[in-house]
Length: 160
Image (cartoon, rainbow, N blue to C red; front, side):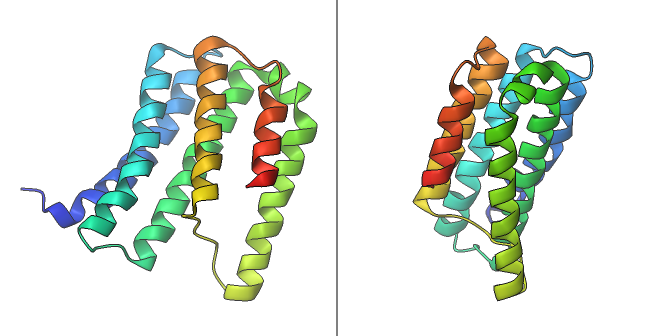
């Protein structure tokens, strides 16, 4: 029987499991409807793991860091999938994508230097960024829509 206190860890583990499955689905340079379903489940697990952990009073630094690593894994797999399925979109939006990556790496470096650990973001602005990524990912993989989505996502990321 699963203890309630293990649910947040299980949700994080589920995200780690779903992430490479997204890449697996994209290996043939197209994705099925399972990609979107898996991605949405992963995002919902990201939303609810923290809520449940706080309600059960099992939120720890280790759990928050695992959550952040699961997010990195998920979005790295989404990026790889985007390259496999929509390489031209990645090429077309290389400037905002590369600058967003550079900003994230600088932020990680500052956190490592200042606090000797990677950042673990759980602010409302980080949640807004996550929702923007959700919209962009569903737009791209669900509807092949990327016209101005890349620049909009970039500006949301800058604000966040």
